[in-house]
Length: 337
Image (tube, rainbow, N blue to C red; front, side, top):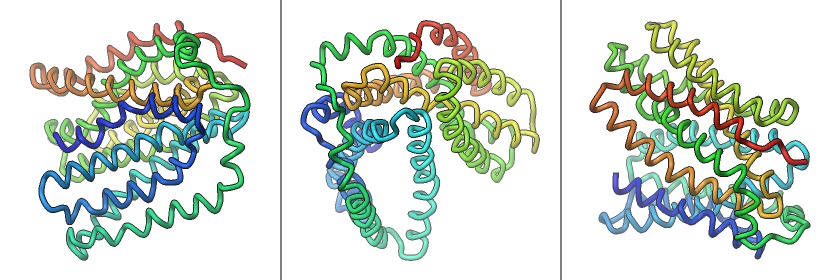
């Protein structure tokens, strides 16, 4: 648990990194992300002692924080008027990485053992090199043409979006923790076989990939609030449908649930960047940093509820919280042009 904390704690620095990127053009951090994170994470298998593990995870966390503070803002700027679709593609590729990465690492460990993990370092180096070759001519264009606002002015401008959005992220975090963290455990406790419990998360995440891409695209055409509100309403509904069924019928229900629940990721990121286009990286970093803290609190509270009332009741309470959170969608301002 402490190792996970050391890796994720640097995420709290994302607002600072984003603010500096708006002022100083730190787009090179995106190019360094794959190689630095790849080296740090690949050396975990040969780390000599706990202190070395901590140092490598902090380095990887810093690299990831910089990448995710600057990268979405860069992608958003280059997306032009199709911001939702651009954020959908960003999240699609991230989900694919999270799907392929564990399989690749486990395969390497199965063949060569933990000592073979450093052989993955060239993949990170190659990724950064390809990004540099492909993007060197557009990096300078990926800056906002308007002058970045001082951080206090930017905060004031973002407040009408960020305040209700923070509440939405918080209540949504309970549902996402239920689905992505406790789902296999819940199914095992309910008597499902090991294969069904393990495959459930793959079905959910796989459908979520399509949901993220289509949700972002639809938000460009139908509106951010409409897609967000639809997801906030329908995700709890399908959660209750999921809880009321069993056996192989769970697979299509999980597919629908994953599609609906994970479709809002690019929508929220687009709303954040639209709240202050002069400070895209700061807005994105503030959202990512706050999201890390809120998700951590929600995960802790959900675990406590599960210990006291059981996972089924905790899932039901998560659904009810998300339904209550629908009212926060109406507090969001209309999309800025």
